Length: 312
Image 1 (cartoon, rainbow, N blue to C red):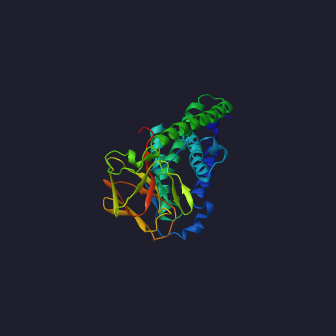
Image 2 (cartoon, helix red, strand yellow):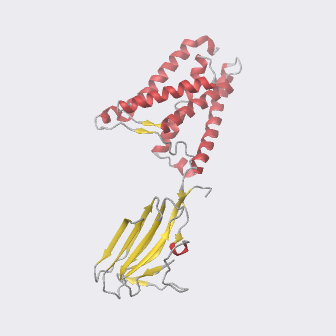
Image 3 (cartoon, rainbow, N blue to C red):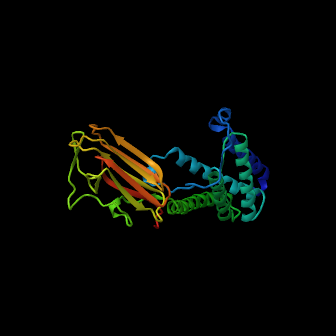
């Protein structure tokens, strides 16, 4: 049975599948019931992790987002096969019409409050359609229907894996990850010098002995100690530190962290209160970091981890 002789069957199948997809786009997952609870239109124009390559743990324990991303691609592969079978057209024309259609549907989703406009969905849906078109071109080359279907399915699987891998690698390349911990006294162009020799003396805070690993900073008899560091070209880094008043001291103390004069954190301890604190601050950008230590407050294991691309 040659597929060309059954255009009506394919047309009916395409219509039914289109209705099925439209149902999921607009009404599945309780979208209609949630529309009354949404008061704002949602438009997301920047792609973010749209086709991440999963590792073994992801495959064994897939998350909802993994399944949604995979489904957004796989569900639109049939359109890349059915539409060219019904209407012969070039790849460029097919993809142009398909992308325009998806943009319209995403916009309708946003304005009807039955979903959001998400550029990730546009990329994923269009990728699925492109895979389907490639599978159609590779599969339907003979008059043997069974062979054509088998080759198309196999080609679709191979193309899916290939595109998944390429997109996953690109996603990893253009996704920042947290770099190694760097002690702050190793930071160039800084005034902070830790009050340590070759060994870091332990601190006793709240009845517990604390062993610093990298550095210790204190005012050492002065009312105030100020550490300054030039951020330079560093952007999007996390500053980590521990603080507290040693048990053998009864005075109060405080620490303050500012970036370009803007206060990022302030912590103080009353006299006689000995508790260990931990802090972390995200510094997205700035020129100068300042850490001010007052009273008997001790600051130790101060360092940062910078968000970096894989090539940095």
